[in-house]
Length: 158
Length: 412
Image (cartoon, rainbow over all chains, first blue to last red; front, side):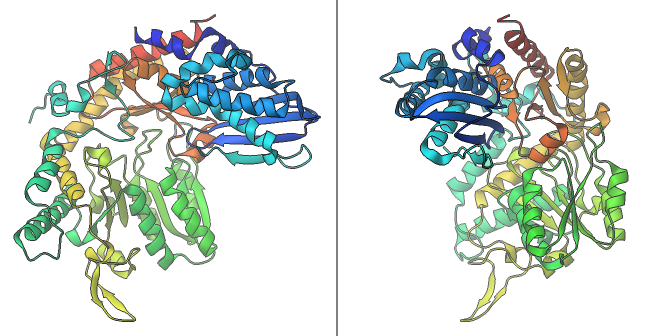
């Protein structure tokens, strides 16, 4: 049956992240937060970060979307927590390469997120995987807003 | 005539292929339909033998192209039973058609404080042009509620059609719920109040006989590509008396009578609206599609789609954890079936079904207010057409079962 091919995309670990996501919820205190939407499919994700001394001290995500986008968000939090901002941004770039089917330098540091490399064979789903990482990038490059301000909403464009 | 629907697929070479190691079952007809050989050949023949610009060449090819283009207009006129070809404008598609009505006719009749009435089941192309117009004119955009069966709440509609209502704009058939709306009733009510009825017929004209005069629609919009024709061609029907009052939306070649330094005058209907070189091959392709549909017969197509829906619905209803949207009474719906598998996101459903060779759509279907109304982020949608068979329906049901199994039991 052709559905066996789905295993490339939906590995057990991906379904596990989707069903029991890490760090899903909201932070009481955060230094930056953003909501990113994918207008073509309606997926939406909120990412909150607590940055101290340029290090990601804590992170939470929430939102609604498919298995891929929710699992990817969960994996993303695993990969970046405790990392310096610069490294988190590097990881984001590496992840973007990996899901497009390219090699990346720091693949091992991506951890479970590497499991999403199979997405490269499903071009229509690449954006699902990158939504949370794009939100992270925007938040880390000061495009988010502090927790006292309104959550900033934005649409993913590329 | 008796039509062998099982053999119809032979007219559509694209359907005879393997995707992801499975025979293709194409069920995304509400998005766009496949084209029969007759349409492809009509377009090819035009480019091989008659290509020229229309309405200007004195030469033979110019004459030929013009007569084929205008002949296509006559085919469209007959297909929707318009009174005359002057009432048939070629556009890019339903979106362009509705934008023209809002921009030109809306501009003409809407005053501050007026109301424009639409419904919660509209496609974005029948929402946003009115939103923009309402904002510009300080008018109010009002929505007709839906019943729990996903039909227009006609009590609510009657109540909301008031002396303030200038325009009612409603889809003939919903692209998400597949529900057929009582257009004639709405036409009667709004005409009693001296308002106008605009109909988004994108999901209706391909699937049922449509008589714009019997419906008494003031404007009626539809697309070619959803009815076996090529992309980039569509139609705006309008009553002559209204079209005559309207200003063109676009200006340029082809649509002018006389151009002076500071002012110009327009050609007669329908050409005053068709600025620039039109989609000639598109119009010819659309006419060929209409010929093809006529040969089978629109009533026969209605019957065929109803048989498919009556065949597949009980099978779908029997699947535990499957939510179906739209009316339970199949008499009120077309071959559009929106569904969700509980606990599985529609995008994952569509990817999984694609692996089974079954092409369905997932997402908000350009109807975000409806998604909000239904309290769904998105739905999956299968949409049947004349070339689909009971075997396709079986494959569709099997793919849903396999998808459900994969996501809900495969890893527990």
